[in-house]
Image (tube, rainbow, N blue to C red; front, side, top):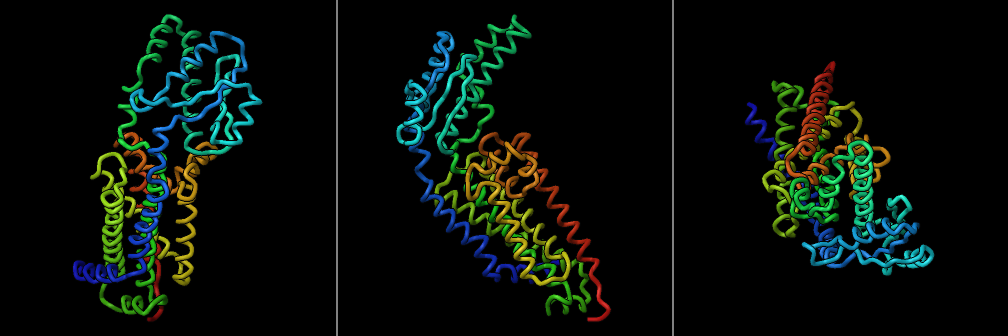
Length: 384
């Protein structure tokens, strides 16, 4: 009985052209547009130093010397390209150039304490690079000062360690082979596609409620238990949406040649898990109440688009901004967690941070499924 119902539900799923479009053609079309828009931007950044003005707010020769040595020693591509194109200016001159970002992308100010700060005119990849430089230098300076105060006997070793080539750190923590910041848009696109799978499983509740559809009425007078009807609907919806999402992902990987970084089987497995989140969300919403399915679809679309916006689909730095001001939102937003799972695979590999995203996706899927089943079982009728 289960396999017979599952086969029929699969036929219904693969014949649903609307859901196939949203979970296949939409990411294919939008992914292609993303590729056209962002495809070569990062390669250009890798070949061009970031134009940076440096303003010294100190006359301390040691601070000036150390800062110059650090900034001028930064490079890309194994030393073949300087990271920063530096101009040493007064602040008034630098500020005038900053308004035209073709001349200066940011101003690094050097305080009398040796710490760096950054003034930028607008956000972007260049500004992110400069901010990382400033943060890295300040953290190193703080480490030296703390060591000198608490453990002066280890100061020489700490300084020597900071002066060494840090490529061994990158090899350990950044295992992926694509550091393109525009890749976050594709992560968010995949998370949106996975959540749009909810539009398919949303109909499971509608098809099992007698007062919502003719199919629901027939299902309730049939000898098939509602639990089995819903279970086969859920499994079939998950299979269909996972197949469609994997096809969209393979198109991006092998047709558009987008390098997601990390291990390909794990990337595909993460997409399958993301699809489970979307399907379980729709299953839960579909079993809430008996209001019209159009209203439930509106709720799902709104939840999906808001979540994906907060995860960086419309503005790539949005997730970073939320992390800084309200990090709990990113931890609870399924779209942000899904995109973070792909990001972790690329940047850090299948380590602790990736495992946290997997646990969250499994946990929230289980909660949605259980709640959906409980709500579905509570529906009863005096007559059909």
